[in-house]
Length: 248
Image (cartoon, rainbow, N blue to C red; front, top):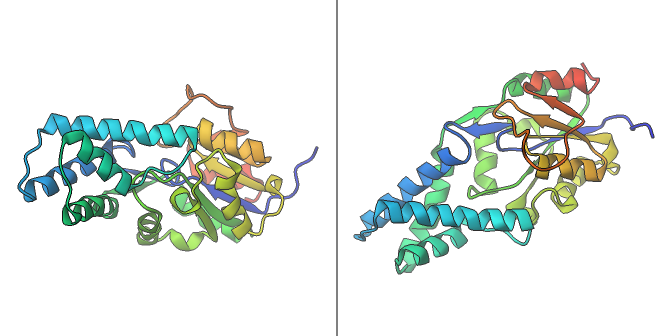
């Protein structure tokens, strides 16, 4: 069966459009641990560094369990409760709010780098008449912060619609994770859209299941050993997209 003409392209956020300097996993977590430690110390409490590290590791394991099972979000508020119980800290309302706010603080201040060719490719795709969207599995940095960071990078205006998991309640590869963005882009046939992402299990599998053209981005890292199907195309620079999609 031939594919209909391409109308839209959606992008994963982390490790596709942008990444945290130092890595979008360990780099962000290091900042989150440090911020949490500072907040706890300012409250006059003493927690061993290795104990806090272990609690954050266990919390991320809890997040990934929910991510893979797709059985609900694990929010900063959930994380604070989990970590506090793990380290034996009793939370009052003020300390709880300060610790939750620490995740926002880190999200707003961590240094981000853009994927190779993003600044050049997005305007070219839009100039070719394609609608652009974002489909993002949110970790512990909320969607409003992520949109604000894109705006600060001068990229938010490139996108016509988005779907963030903490707002939809769904992680990729579920169709429900993609659908709000596709609806916002006016796409009634997913086969007329492409999705670009770094993860085989979530981005590639989800896109292919919907009939979208799947493009795997390896510009930050190559997850070749990851479980999941391979994409229709693999690129390491977004500047290859217009030609690859036939709109150059």
